[in-house]
Image 1 (cartoon, rainbow, N blue to C red):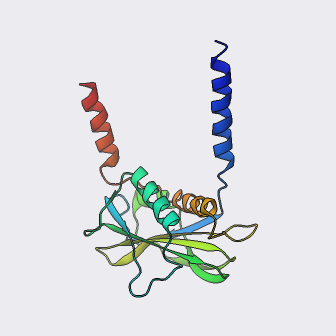
Image 2: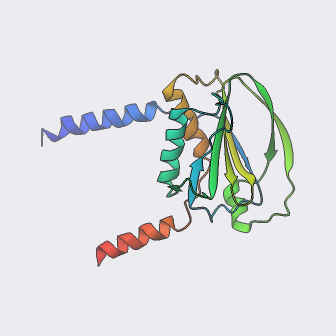
Image 3: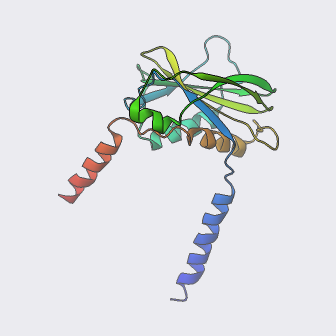
Length: 193
């Protein structure tokens, strides 16, 4: 019994330290009433056309997005993906047009596309990260989330800041890939047989 306590103490300390390393950032998001949020299965990361735009390419951000989407059951596929995910880092402050809308989880229950968009303007601080989801078949943006810190800008040269920003933003996109949860349940039931 005595050997269990030091390892339990160590595990608790590691868990606490990992939780303290994550600081949720203030995030806003808006979405299109034309989005089929329960019908997407695949995604890919948007690559800038033409000369490389350093504000739209970043390995840490890409890996964080891919990890989150795979966690939600989406498969990365470069051949006609359902969703194309793009991002942009803004070093300077900016004025941004967004929308005041019902929470997305509430809207999805009714999927009433006759709801009006209520535009609002945001004055975003320096160091803002924007992530957009495009429906490839509809050729339109269907969801976007953006984060900045209240206490200063996101440091785009700091991997931890970038991962934290991506996690904070994508925590607002809470849709499992179509069929993923049913597939996980079916696999679990098959193992029981």
